Image (cartoon, rainbow, N blue to C red; front, side):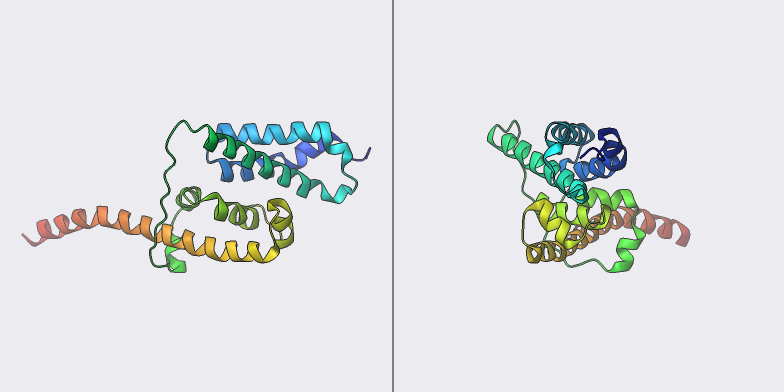
Length: 183
């Protein structure tokens, strides 16, 4: 395992792990903590990894498990009420999603439950394969595929709902301009 230099691994995987952690935790401070904890665990247990090609999967799996551990602790010792809101709206058309800015799509992604958010982030933002995601999340490949499909549908619904709310805010403004122009 001498080929696996700690600094080299941090340099190579830190930004990917941080983005994944940010997708899961939804705030920068917790994402930083999760990423640091993952590398702390690597420093103490990474030498046990026998296959050097599995470093990336090990890091992502470890980060995900740390996230779940922190989540269970927060639920058990909750400080605030956790809201459970899922919109059941029709799907957004692809051109609707294309018009939104990346920031808006990320905000919609952040509003999703972790069950669907984690596979979407791993697949689309971190470019993991179905098999890697299954390994990281410790779920069957079929479940990964199902959660990706259902997660995409939920994301489309959330995006469409957000667009409708934004359009509704601007309709009265446009109507008032039209009325002023007619007079």
